[in-house]
Length: 368
Image 1 (cartoon, helix red, strand yellow):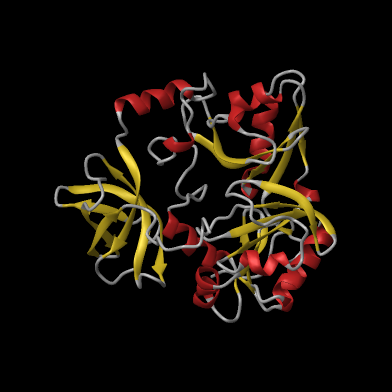
Image 2 (tube, rainbow, N blue to C red):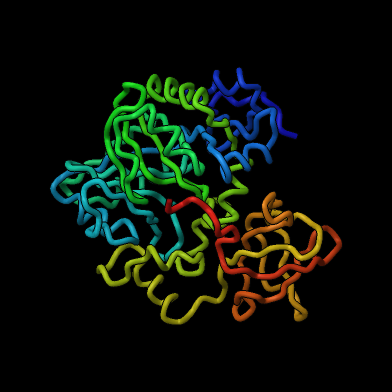
C-alpha cells in the first residue's frame, strides 16, 4: 500500500502544491512525489487525451546542456542515433549504451544554435551525468540544469487549439521540432513531442513560468492527468519505459529500437555488441500483445506457448479503448512474430493472448 509519508530525499516539483489542491493521489516516482491520478479517475484522464486535451506535470525529468567545440564528436560517441542529422530547431529520440550494448538510458536530444539540450529520465540523472562526464572529449562542457527547469506536457487532439491562445510560437511545427518563444508572457521552449501518441507539445521553462502556464491551460480546458493514464497511453503506442521495458540488461535491437540505432555513422559506445546482435539476430524481442481472455497482465508475468515458457511481461494494463488487457513482453525467437498466439500466466491460470503489430491504437492525432 502506497502512503504519502515520504522520505526526505524524495523531491517535489514546482506544481506539487497545485496537485494537492486538485486532490491528486501522490506517489513516489523517479525520486519525486508525482500525481498518479486525480479525483475524476484514470479513465476520464485517459479519454481526455485520446479525444480532447490533457496536461501532465513532467518536471521530474532531467535536463543537461552540452556544448563546446567537440560537442558533436562527443555526442556521436555517446549516443546511438546520428546526431549529425540534427539541424537547429530539431529534436531526436536516442539512447546511451554501455560497451556490452546494455541501455544506460533513453533520451531526447535537441539541437540549439550554440549547444545541445538533452532530456533524460528522472531516476537516471546522477548516473547519466557521471557517464557523460567520463566519456566526453576535451572542449566539451556538460551542465546539469535539471533543478532550474520545470516541464509540462499538453497532449491531445485539441492541444494546438488550446495552446495557441496563450503563445506567440507557431504551433504548426513538424513532429520532433521545437521553438523558443513565449507562453503566457514567459520565455519558454515549446517542443512538438510527447509520450501519448497524440498531437501534443512539451513546454520547458522556469518554475514560475510553468506554474502560470499549468494554471492557464487548465482554465482553457486541459484536464490534469497523472502517471497511471500516461502509462496506458504509452503502452498502447509501444513507447518504452526505462526500468520496465528497457534497462542495462537489454540492448536497442531486441528492444525494437533499431530505427534510432545508426550503425552507419561510425563507432559509438556499444557499437560492436549492437552490430553483432543486429547481424546474428536477436534471441528475443520486445513485442506488443493484447489479451483474448479477461485478465490484466502485469510486469513479471510469464509468457508461454505449448512448449513452455518463452518470455516475460515488462509492462501491462487495461486499455479503455480496446476494452481488454494489453502489454509489452520480451518473447524468445521464433515465437515473437505478429499474430503469434501466446498465453500469459496470471496467478494460476494461463490466459490466451496474441502478439500484435504496434501501435495498438492507430487512429490518433499524432501527425495532425
